[in-house]
Image (cartoon, rainbow, N blue to C red; front, side):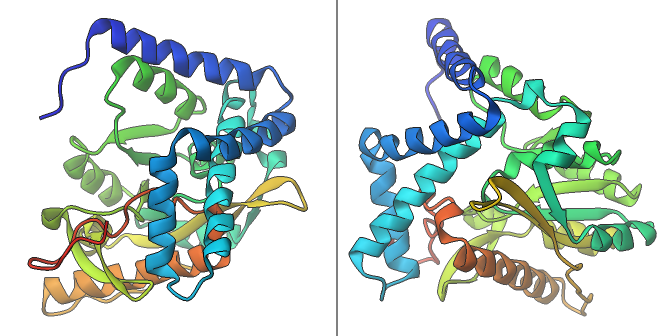
Length: 306
């Protein structure tokens, strides 16, 4: 069990977060993102443990990749995170019309087609570019979205971040309280967004190939879809360096069928969406969250990879 934080520590952490966001927000948003990218590169020296994890992940995913190239990709990850921070720092200044001009959206027809079915929609995405843009984008187009989030263990920081996420009306669902509510929302034809690229604990996931290595992956998307007949829609936000803006790609729905075995259907759906995530990681390797121990949970009896 994690040690309970003192009130002083809670306030100190909250003050640091607010100070960082305030500092970034003093610049115009594009300047803040450029500054953030440089700040991210600096963090490779401040947090060597995360850099080590990124390099180990790259070694697992790309065993043939030269060490110098792995370091370049790992540095890109920190740069992407810093840019993302610069972008988020301006959330409180954005208006609805700003989002439409700040972000290019591709494949909106795929979303409209899914909407026409009248079924609930499961947006799944990964930690690319600025995944937090999905808290702003649907409301900017007058659409409601419910986002599944992991609550921050500091309630003072959580309250601040949640205000940014929900500024335009998005609803955040804490993972611990969300399962039943997500079923109800999808059965009512609403939209639920889920980040699906993190390591899952044994009781929460199934093992599927990710870069040819077994990775414990959430079963929540498959279970929700099979129970509610929801549309599964891939959605990814990545940085376009030439345009200096984020691009959101809404892909065609992920087709799936129910089978005689729930376990087979869950495994099939999980394999399918993981393959889509891998395709994006391969296309935009510098923009993915390599600092997360994606292969941390191992099949019983198998040696750890970290």
